[in-house]
Length: 287
Image 1 (tube, rainbow, N blue to C red):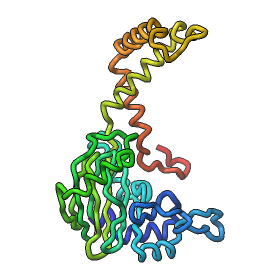
Image 2 (spheres, one colour; image 1 turned 180 degrees about the vertical axis):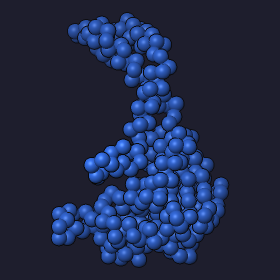
Image 3 (cartoon, rainbow, N blue to C red; image 1 turned 90 degrees about the vertical axis):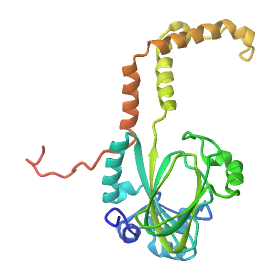
Image 4 (cartoon, one colour; image 1 turned 90 degrees about the horizontal axis):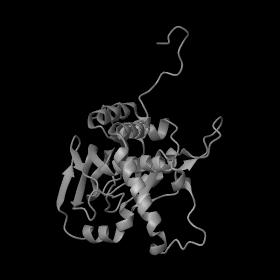
């Protein structure tokens, strides 16, 4: 486990790697602190104003604030290698965050994620409370905040599952499952491997995008509705609605399966950055 990530790795990222926001967030009681609370100017030779200030982070952490290292797959090589391998196995995009929580503290209130999560406990012990979903299989535009009252009500009930994770333990949380976690005893560190699943909704979006492009090639579809039309009047629009519906249905039927697969492949290709590509090569070293 230590060769993947560790408390020392988290410390190095904050103190020696010149991190900038948003690669670090500081969170207390579910609220993200403004970046001015934990950043400062980069100093001589670095004309930036949002570099992580390790002294400020240390002070906040001592006051019970959780450090969230975002996009660790972009900043810590072992995690990046692991994430690329995992994404290749799963067929879905993966990203990683690291959470460093002070003793006996909780960074986030009960919530659900819109992606599947593998929690990997790296350091210390953390108690997790898990409740069944209030909304099954939430999409990416359906965050828990849109159902905050339902989530709070569910979280106020006895947990469906309570367990303690120790270093080396892994917990799988399907998207939509409500969860919260509290550090026990000492400092805790855990990785979250977020699996951003491709869904059948993505297939539907690919279909509709291509169908719209197809019908837009028809001059009649591009033409204007009659002057003086009342667009909220069903009766006035009835003939146009019927014909456009038929045009769309026909376009959907004629889209080749291979075109949908190609659209999904293009979407997937843009969802994750590839592995490192050497930038500086001596003449003659090009492959």
